[in-house]
Image (cartoon, rainbow, N blue to C red):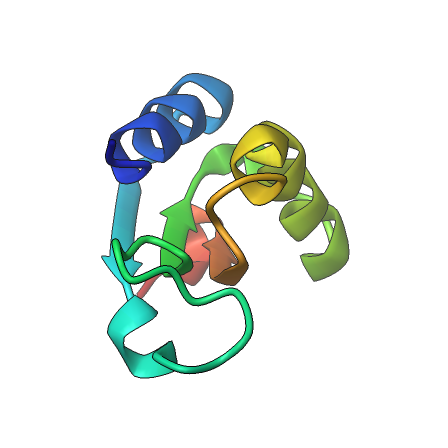
Length: 90
């Protein structure tokens, strides 16, 4: 079962991003805590959304973590987040 499509759907529904990129970095963490040989345990996510306007970096990350709470409690061990507004994405 792939986690990325679920993550994409939740972020699209919750943040209406103008750009969303999800990269599986799990292969770089083989042998480390939380690594899953099936992949999708360590992800890098770039989200560009107007929903982040006026929010601090911590608030933005909390928004994403809240949307992905179920995945973070399960297969996903780590997220590297880049959360930007469209004006910041240049």
